[in-house]
Length: 140
Image (cartoon, rainbow, N blue to C red):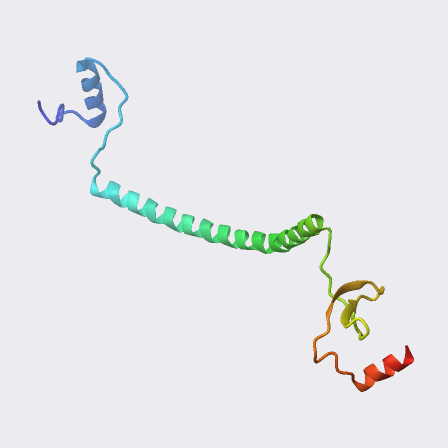
């Protein structure tokens, strides 16, 4: 078969000649070789798309970072609330009062309401009396 048909006709007329001589006309996808000027046009379009993609990705990164900065404290509060619900306790930082009970040999830690937070046995170093301890023991 010939590789080129109706070359003696202009491009528009070639399509007419091909249609009138064809058995059938169908739509089909195939790979077509491009001319150098067509390839250059694709390269220019490709470069413009690359710049546009890079710009959009940078914009997305900035928006995403801002979103995560705003979301971070909300997530932290959410986790803290979840922990409170699970344990039925809340972690607090406040002034506590440490008292020694020499009779029982215990050390007690109390909050400002006078509630015992924790206790433990006194160590041997803590069992030694100081001047302040002597005054408290004498006054009791």
